[in-house]
Length: 195
Image 1 (tube, rainbow, N blue to C red):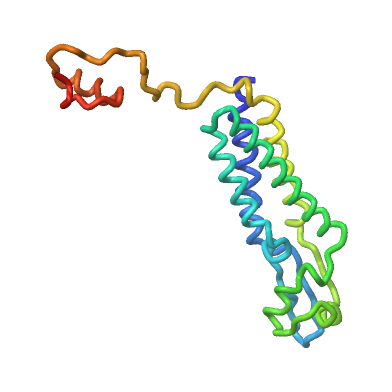
Image 2 (cartoon, rainbow, N blue to C red; image 1 turned 90 degrees about the horizontal axis):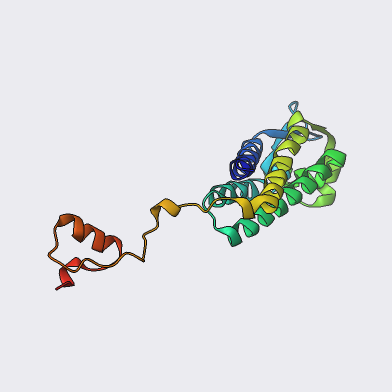
């Protein structure tokens, strides 16, 4: 499982980016009986209000997961699974039956009419675009990446080991040259205070 970290981070990142892009695309075409000849286009972020923020959270989790220590790997893996499942449930609800409630904000913005019953009377047809179904792949990637992180987190190599300063090295005690001064600074010591 040497590539587990890479695959986990890549999966969550790809799902989050795809979800963010999908949130800007038209998910539903709404026909309303206001005399307009053209259908109202509703973006994914308008149909699922949490879509863009949770997609951004998945992206942030993926980036953080790439450098996280063991405890945070479990936290971020769990967070990714929760984000993915929440968005998948909301997405599947739209697939199985979008309603006037899902497009209420867009209809109110376009017509100025508010209220669930008034909007429900205005909406005569709702048509889904392929984005509604295709975006399910993004949430499955986020869930899969989170699960992979949870299962393999313990086997990942620690990030950033090569940048850690050894605290075992003894401070220089003789006359200091420029290299010795840098070494003292690397250990967190002030070379100007040495005798």
